[in-house]
Image (cartoon, rainbow, N blue to C red; front, top):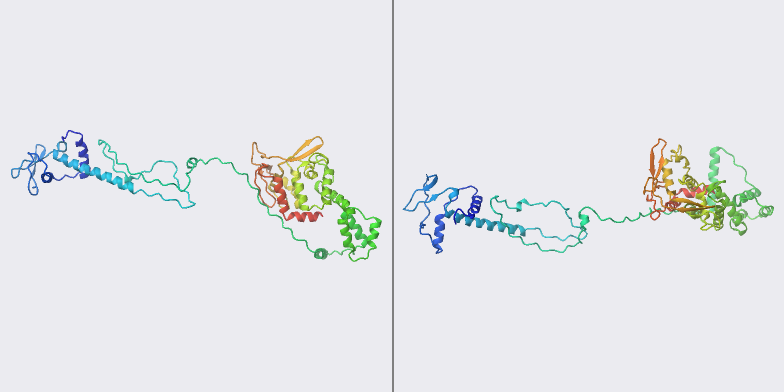
Length: 485
């Protein structure tokens, strides 16, 4: 090997890297002895020194360090880095080979130290790092070689064993942060507790309670009660209250001539259950409840008063429970005129004075079935009962799916989707203006604060059906009906 070949630069760089700038020791004598011991040929111009190599005295000669001759040996010169001898080339080759072998060994050891794959415990999802720049462990990367040295390809490390994953592979769209589009499920209606009415108390307890309450009011207000009514007076009052007329002469005589102790109880049962009085009872209470529901003059426009009275008359004749009556009146759909297709007399309650914004229907339902006067809260907060505008319009939002379709003399009440009052809105909101001119929105919320899903789509929420459930579950409903009776 001559210093002019390319290997010289490589070995020179490796030697500098190993010695780190220190002066290398003179190993020429030991290397020649090793060659001689192995039976290798030794150049004739290289004598084999015996014993430990002497320490030569170096003197500068022509810009180079020259050792003084000893025991007739030839002079050994140490030339500059640019003119090294072939002996140092041999040493550099050996040291470079050792360095290359050591580097390959380090790479193999590091590759064998990779952490093993651990099976995920049940119910755990492996954490997956999002795509990003690769993180390099600087402790495992060898120092870069000089730019003038050709790069050496390292020995590839053995690939780790492939272990089947314990969980299904993740969707790449999820790893990229874009979850796949899934059609949202329709919201479920808010469960409303069913009303739990108390069992009726015995008649004796009811009478005692009423008598005690009246006596307390008389004492507190210093009122002297009227004397007890005679049988004739009591009979007249009973007929007027139950069937809406005074008794005939024969009916009055039959009662007053009866001397039984329970004659009053028997007359009450007769008016309520005898077939001779069912029609009168139903007609009287149909008229009374029509006046309560739509007023004495109601039914002049879209509603049909005769149709409502017929519906009520049939309901009372069949002894329909009040809770069923309330539910049918709030949720009714169909035609208002008797004899027409899809006739349903119950729709006349909401059709009387129908308005697209359903403000009248809101006030009627709260007043008749809950005993709350909310109509004042339509424009401002109630001055004495504490009702707010938002409570009124939140209750009003329950009626916004209601729609009246008029064809000739027939009016049909239907349910339609309600997207909301906003432009291109789909949220089902209702707008109202405060006295200060602020425009606000409201969603279906019952007067006690119970909320339902805000969607105005019928396939998701039937708002009037939800309102009926909330009214029936309210403790105010039975109190309001008792007061009406």
